[in-house]
Length: 191
Image 1 (tube, rainbow, N blue to C red):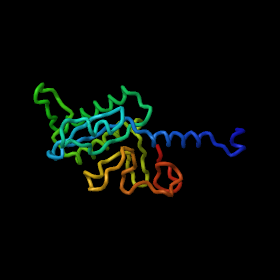
Image 2 (image 1 turned 180 degrees about the vertical axis):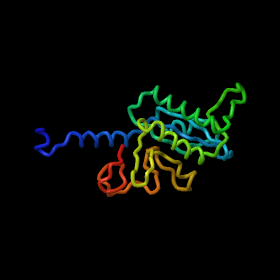
Image 3 (image 1 turned 30 degrees about the vertical axis):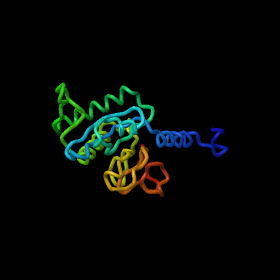
Image 4 (image 1 turned 135 degrees about the horizontal axis):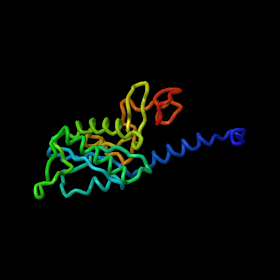
């Protein structure tokens, strides 16, 4: 109580520190990759490290990252693996999984465009793992938004952005909101 008398609010301080921690985190991603020569194929994967390690890890010169969804900093690695396994199981119910040529085992590649996969995976992650994802719900638009990265060069011909999670919703959050990640004055949509 004494802290409030001096104008210091511990809860507000903690919320702001947590927001900055999540905003600055560059590890833990569910990503979608693509082969630019095969537009009807997409790969789903995860990295608990930096996203850039997955952008250059393939021997395929036509492989690139399409987009990635940010998992909160501090989520246990077992939970991160559970999220990836759940996404793969979900996609397997909708699309044909491409088996490895040599072993015949299931791969992380599916016959689906990366754009279509992106929308489905975003919605699945938000609906099933919003507590683990770096996200918020916008009450005004009634949408869930996961902070993400996209390959702006591949998708729109712009210069490639650094591997950092951003609000890529359209329109993005309103700058006049008093809450981080919100969408309007006095809203309460920050998770």
